[in-house]
Image (cartoon, rainbow, N blue to C red; front, side, top):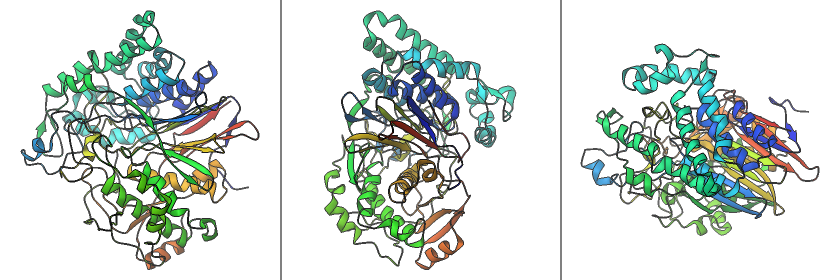
Length: 578
């Protein structure tokens, strides 16, 4: 029996796995109280917005995948906000900008997470918003113990908070000090925001559940929350990466016109599994493109994390991410040739481009022209921005996978009186009008956030995901291959050492690329590193447990058991069930 870092969680009623153990407990409590998967998932997601403010707040975004046992269908909830009407390429270039900053107010899109959660609850849940919001409200009002990673982020950002973002300092630096590990952190303004929204729902319940939820949405997007945001960002400029103080571009009209969309997921088949992702407004299809390329190899025969295996996965990633760079964008604005990109014939053509003995230093999208790949670009290798993730499965076979992120406390100041900041996902846009990710009013940036859902034999089977920006669909892919091709159980697959390439341009400011670079956790052997160097890869050795935080659940239909796992990396993710 192999050593595993966490117990493999097994239950028959429901299992939750999330980026913070208290959020997992919130979801389990909802299930125990009679809620379904979607009720539990929404409650978990709202709790994470309190517990991981450096990874995600309600000012961010939340792409969601749902398997409905009633419908026997998969749905994607488009939880990504849109650019303001005032955000044009001309607005930026007329001010001498050639890139959108990664901090402050300028890269803010309409906050989408709240709309995504309420949309999921209204269509697929059974409980009221007040019921699923209550645990998050309690965590904000009564507080939770500060954990090491949050402490380090607050310590790193404390001077900026004190000097520039006093509204953030008031909450996250109580008495002007970085809270100690174990100290209780309270967020009273956030608790009050939640309370007011819940009260709006309550007074509208006489009109029915759906009307009450619509009223709660209106409170956020057409009422007091939107007004406070717009007043704050137009009342004071903040210093950002442009070197200037800038006010925000979002307007009340941007908020009022915003709608959350429920869509079809995109899918491919891999060795008998049907793998679903959100559309090309995320990087999710890149996961599917990699699977299609790798479907032509006997990966198990290569040996897990052998030089051959790592080389082939890295080269496949380069090809798939080149297509992401060239083609992916908001399909309401960009004609993404997804049918071609996800076809098996196309994958077969792309597979032929892999040289088994030499690392490619090109970016080769499917139109056969190479993209320019300049080396360097600043701080893309590591960032104190990150993400979180959650998965839930209940006894009925309902499944949810969500990757909420954005609204980071370290990238934009807390909105006075609301207790959360705006997101900065607009930094993923380009100011090149010919780029698929060209900035345009009302357009969604193509986010890196990418939940995963799998069916087998037409039955619900697995949900999983991880934080990690551009690396999400590399670490998540390795987890899935560990399970499918190397027959590991869920926790073994999560624990196994990982790698990724940073060959392509980062999605984040300042969009740096690092051609040929492969980062390995140092549990991957020195002999393997040397063999990869001989093939032309540039090797970076990272900490033994430093890549991502995969969480995953699956249904063992033969035994009627739900199985869960969570990565030990960063120390807070956990699976729970009963």
